[in-house]
Image (cartoon, rainbow, N blue to C red; front, side, top):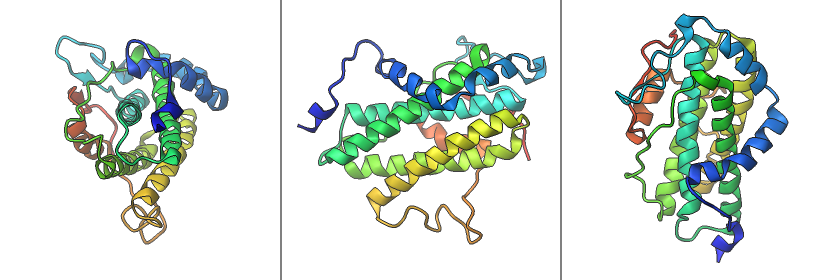
Length: 238
């Protein structure tokens, strides 16, 4: 019965079927992809991802400098978008109407974020990642919510950790707008698991600051769900 709430016309690749509406929504309020794309194409050769679109060895090199950080964010948004598309396609037992609506909203946000980075990076973007969700039971509420919590907490910490590595202020502004949305997702999902846990000590420290993670730490955690090898050796560090 709940599935009747979200009946949609779909053909071909399910990840692409939801792109057009989400892309329009996002660019209506983001307004920064075009300017970022112009800057991205003017980056030095050293900043461009080496072999980023090389499918012969099936490894994506994120690149260096700001381009590398944008590709890093793009990889994470690909993972999250693929997850929430699957959540809606295969709804867990006992899902409520409110949860369906919220998960659709989150799915659309993540697709919009994914398309934002893809369009901003243009020819510098890595290719489509192959994901592995075999460890997730999409028919189980607990499995879906706990995975969603892990992804959202990881995403927030990833943006927080990468912020200091971004040199161009336009990129930093865009990242700030996106991480605030990711934090809203994390808060709602956490409350679905345990009400009032939206900002507990797992994600907020004694100084009232969100947890941060460095790119290689984040990618090591995410690698459980990503089959495509990712080379992050050229990313900036601190």
